[in-house]
Length: 111
Image (tube, rainbow, N blue to C red; front, side):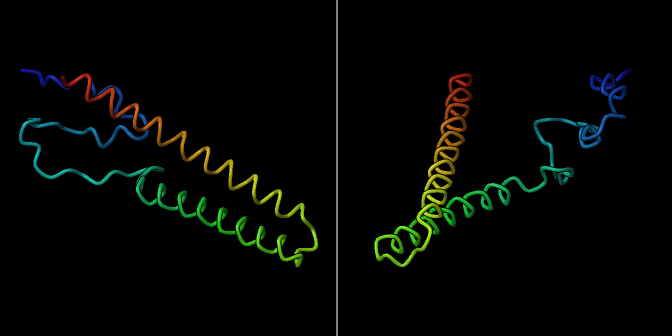
């Protein structure tokens, strides 16, 4: 008797497919294996990205105060920092919106 997943043996040479291994019963999957590869810590990567956006916004805010006080020698620094912070926020919002759309689509499929 052949396993219903035996056809996956042909793709075991591909990188990242090794974690598929043997699936013994989806209902009681038991312990899961740790994911290996370039995306091992998605939450950490996401947190690092959000911290980077927050740092760029803080830098732009500090430079805005310096421009208002007249202590900043080169106002172009503030312009660049402000633009970087705005682009970071736009990218963060776009990612959030796509994730929310994907979640809503999954919920619609289950209904």
